[in-house]
Image (tube, rainbow, N blue to C red):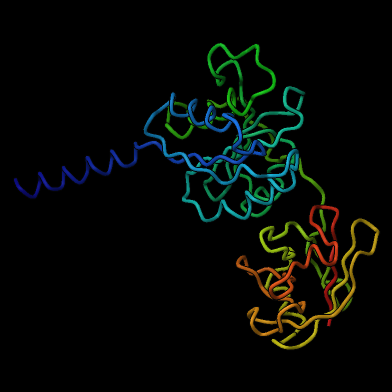
Length: 296
């Protein structure tokens, strides 16, 4: 009898754990100077006060859809399966762009405008399903006259309902083809005896320049620590930087103030100045229009 009671206890606990609301992670370009982010969280809590709410960032530069796309890809793989992300960088709010929920093959959910924000996670995590949000069913009550805050009225509300189990993915709205709006960019590949790629983002705190060239691809150039690499950077067709620098495993391997290449925390090739700001000194920025070439 004691054994049966123990088994029953653990069975009930397991059911309760499965039924617990999941996590919602918010990303916007709103900043934290006003109450916009808090309003979104308030809407989510109104759906279910037991939801776990977290911030990815609210410091995406205003209207920068590309950076929103990058930060999702940078962060989402480290969150558990079932996490629901709300990404609101939406200069076209109130227009005809679709509002969607994307479920990736990794089991993560992404809620927001289909305006390019899901470019990178759709590619890296894979698309399992895409549903258009039916605002007749999934919109905060009495908000139909509001056209400029879908983050609060549609996205936070829908994400919370999905995470809390109030609705299923199918109840979000009609299923769409397994595709999203994508921002074109240079994918990493070999071109002759060099690798070309994109500069998707800066390590903004330090001015380091991050590329989308993986460690695996870079290794094919057979460049050992201490050897020089030649770097060329363009913004569209304009040459911005050309030079050589050593490849190093740590910043301490080069003198202070000197440029270097290294593998960043995501194991992608990057450029920096030890104790300096590479981006500021050489005028190198980031975005889909930035292209880099790496060779021996």
